[in-house]
Length: 420
Image (cartoon, rainbow, N blue to C red; front, side, top):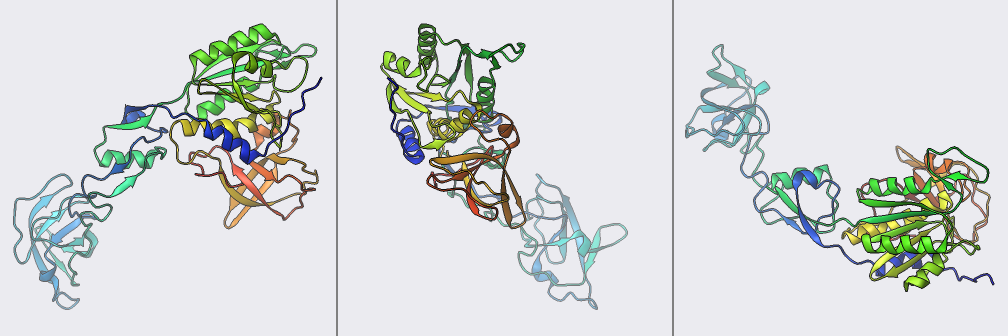
């Protein structure tokens, strides 16, 4: 008898997955190795940024009060008594009518409170004096201590992803090492007797294994390590043993294929044999309705469709946020936005449909266009698309000019909640 499955809503399925995520431990890594990792600690500035008043331009540090009377008809002369660059300080205490030649980033000398930019000064032939033709206000052209961040300011929160700008801030604050969440190790198993290795010649009834390399790339995009267990023929015992091995050796297991209700779809029986708890085995979505997720000893087992587009979509909707949440990410979901549909999409949507699409943003206008052939077994639309257009279930198609929901693929940062 064919198993009757009750589909659940996408949002409910995602919530179930996230409820069963177990957090990874923390570890310390060098700043150089922290790119792309998830912060496991709040970052608070231990000192002001910048830590002292400094010159934002090349020029001359002066006392503003000495420039009060300067005008076009009354140029005021200053004597240059020292010359400092960034990283150096002067020992001189500046007196009336004196100035210090100063470079960008250098600390303001004691007693000075304004900077005359180089182009605002008329230098003498020996460059030991200069004149100005305008008065300068106190703190004019001065970068103030703590103007970027005051000591004790909370700057970064636990759960944020580290990017190049984050690294610049951490370096400024002296973090040679930083506390981050450990990365999960993921096992990948492609099932199906029809599968060939990528380098093999096509023969009757066979197709090359595209899901395995695709998932490896999706994990690589998240900088998550994986172990590929290759492809498995439709043999229950062999599949059971390799899934069992992957469960022991990794933190999370992804299988592709074998989750439908055909005679050789063994994953449901394998979950039962292992004692895994099935969270759901059908989702009200296209493609990928057969997506199945189970949990065994705290480890998530993702049974994705063998059809490439369905497999890709299932990974992005369910696996990606779970792995990011395992690492404590505060924004694990795909980035959500809206866009204007550029062509008719007449196909009705009994379930929520995720259409591989091309998202573009020009000026104030965001547009979305289906990326081509959009059946669940499609490969080309995965290659061409950079977004998923989301069409709600119960609709009878959409027209050019309609505003539609969009999930953007491949971005470093995502959203903190599932919006759709």
